[in-house]
Length: 415
Ligand SMILES: [Zn+2]
Image 1 (cartoon, rainbow, N blue to C red):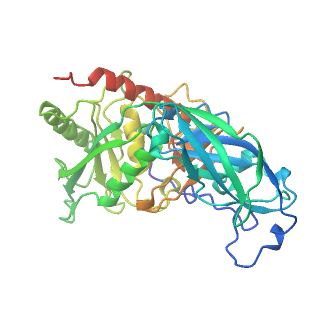
Image 2: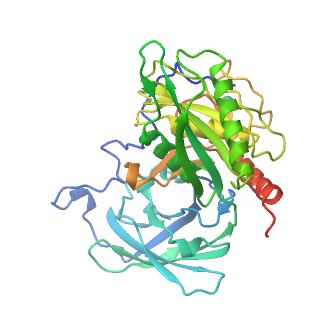
Image 3: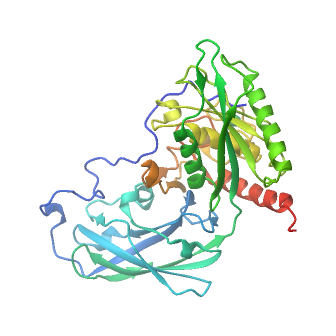
């Protein structure tokens, strides 16, 4: 069902603006001559964007309640006479009647009227806006009002703010992803060595699902058990892996495990020596959380454009996506079947070339993963076999709907 090896390519996802980019705050101590000029007294805001894993320029992607959320405030640089560094603060208020909360920007933004990037270009550069991470109280189910409270010259005085000073967003409740991740420890018959997934592969998968999937949280548990197969692997290996964890799931659900829990196996690739092609037991047309899947894990070394410590994250998210009924978009052409007839974007991208959609990875400080904007034309949906994978709005909304169906149909009756 899935073959994703034999890929090579560019480093994943990090937006590394060139030296000349005006939005990178200079780290030197002297005042940057480009930034000198008459101090402005006012500034105009072009737009406010509220975003999670993926967002369109018109804010059409559903916001999941209690999920990490970013607010981006875009300054209209043409209202300034010269380059300035600005700091900001927003005021957020939700419909629960709780008092307003004030949130400071994560960093200053440098805005230069001599550089005139379009809004589309600005969205692809996380440093080109004032960015605010919403506190958890602000992402409760219901409506949120965002108001720009203050913008001031970094280290200086407040400016009069004009333009789009307010925005609203609606957060929709969603069930968590319930996942039990089972590492299968196998023996390599050729070397006598045993192989089990390192902790980093569990950690990367869990973090990726929390960041990319349309869920407030991941109810996660993990365990390592002995596999009922050995290496070298063959075409039957993944079928045995799926059969084994389906049996484990059945037994655990009979003993009280929440029946909405998905089960995913991780099988270590022994530094590329024993690569087990991933596979889901099926692609259910309706809610079926008992559909299990298995994924390989290991160090990517450029696999599908990934150069971090593990590829278990997007690979596992792909196999898990099948268990939520997701098919293949069909990219790269010829390398993947096009079984998802409704996939809406060119080349398996997160966006058509109009750049309507941008992916947002809000990062994970425990894994050293930074906040990033992921260009919708440079990154690809995780159901493809293409490079630099993230979730597109089509997949985000479809998994969100399926999770709600599963949550309603498989909840245990309250005793
Ligand atoms: Zn697949």
